[in-house]
Image (cartoon, rainbow over all chains, first blue to last red):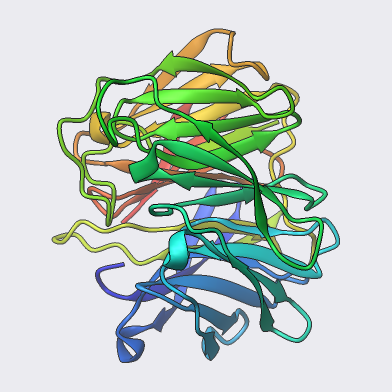
Length: 229
Length: 110
């Protein structure tokens, strides 16, 4: 990120071989690559940039093909549809600005803004009908209706077990079946959300953070949530 | 042999950085991990630790993997078969490869 470069690593897991290979510098754009999602054929990498934009990278040649403009920073919330034809993503502008990328045409369509007090991450159910967004300074989770041509808030769920304002700060998410798992970066908890029932249970994983840097989550008590299996 | 590509945002030794990681089998659909056991991995960035919760409701046993001081684990991505976890280090700029069966770091790229 500080070097504004993207590295391709060739992997052969059987003999446990990981070999760094070609690099792509983003220095000319003045932006840092953050998260990557691939097209189904593996030929394109879509890379979110900080402070804004979505880069399209040809994987074979590691060359930058295009940078699509976005309304603010797209964190690691980029989710591919089950058929691979689209990727839904959310930028931080407007308190959650959602887009859908057509992976064939490599163009973004605008799904609208949600107007939260701020925004961090996005995730979505496999069928693509319901999305989720975290609002750190609002200590809330947005449940998003994605069934139409645009995005709208279906419900807002407070993820705020700690006293004070922005004392929990929902951030990254994982999804499995009826559950969304949300890290609370300030309070060090994991929120286990049953979203059809709108119930929440908290698990304390780490001591609360005295202070954090939201730009890179330095000091965050809890951050990345990934479901395995 | 299973060849995959792994993309990382380049880490620096001096200036700690964020890095995102994505894995994918070349020429196939994206994987999300296909292990038999449901696990939730959470990076505890300030504690240099990964917490692993079990079961859909996270009511099972709680495990932890400790990483070297200063790692600052940020994001975890699994290989398509779920046998390896790739953990980006915000603090030291490293990429740790963890064998999920043993919970051990088998490789560190820096």
